[in-house]
Length: 276
Image (cartoon, rainbow, N blue to C red; front, side, top):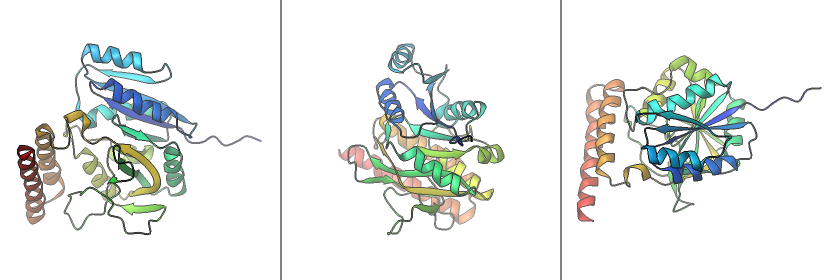
């Protein structure tokens, strides 16, 4: 009598000139309790020295993909997602390289999607790496077409094991193969930020459910690759990507409301940076 094999999962980790962070992330994935896991690291145009350091840091069982240029978050991750599907994966886990995963996390995400074929995208609750019990972001439910995602835990307690939401972060995003076959992967129009929002909105429009699996956990060092939460580069990319996603998915007063909130937040952040 044959034993049913667990679904194959490929974890995709995007690296850009941060070999040490990527190594720690990969090591946390390798400590996962889920056996049917393979790992791909996509190097997104790192310098030759940084790429050589990354190569030395990774074990031989990690698949390393090299892009000669920085393709951005979405297009870079698409290289890894495409590899996952070519290698027969049922699911792909996107994991920021400045994040660490809880050993049971992947198994809990798999169980949630295996139990409900309508879920196309899922995510864990993400905590701050330097404040391990403080929630950075969980799944979020939008109000109308106001597509601003505040940080923190906005789900009503007591939390259900699977909470239906409208959005989960690309920091830790679990994708069903069949969903991406229908709607596609990340849009190449976004270099950084909002590509996860765009994908979630497209998935919901196509009839797929999105879920936060509340007993799945990971920890995130916020904005490490851009120099911190108050980085001016971060604000630039957030405004640019917000304009793309809001023009694509909203009209009229909703477009004005979303962009107004984004610009107000950017102004507040720049002011806070100068005061510090």
